[in-house]
Length: 116
Image 1 (cartoon, rainbow, N blue to C red):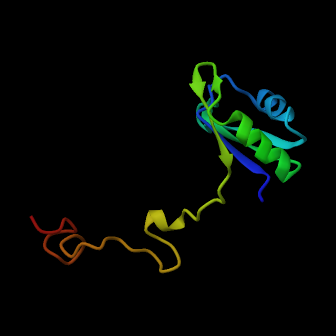
Image 2 (cartoon, rainbow, N blue to C red):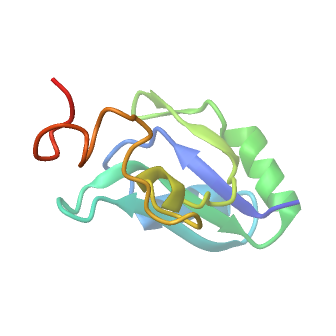
C-alpha cells in the first residue's frame, strides 16, 4: 500500500508546517507539501503528505477525509501516480500532429486558413 496521500480542498491559509502537524497525530510524516502557484505564490488549495508507514497513512485518511477545516470539507485519499501529460499537447511518441480535421491547414484553399 502507498504511503503518499493527496489532500484536496484545503483553505489557502494552510501551510506545509500546518499540514505536517495535523498529519503527525497519526504517525511519522516523511514530507508535507502544499502546492503553490508559480506566478502568484499563493496556495493552489491542495497538497501531498508522505507518511513513514502505510498503516499511518490509512489511519490519517480514515480520520481526516471529509473533516471541516476553516469551513471547507477536505478530501483525503491515496495519491495516484502522475500521468504523462505529453499527449495532451498533440505531440508525443507519434510526433507532432497539427489537426485531425481535413479542412484545416495548408494546401486546402487560401494561405493556411482552410476552407470558408
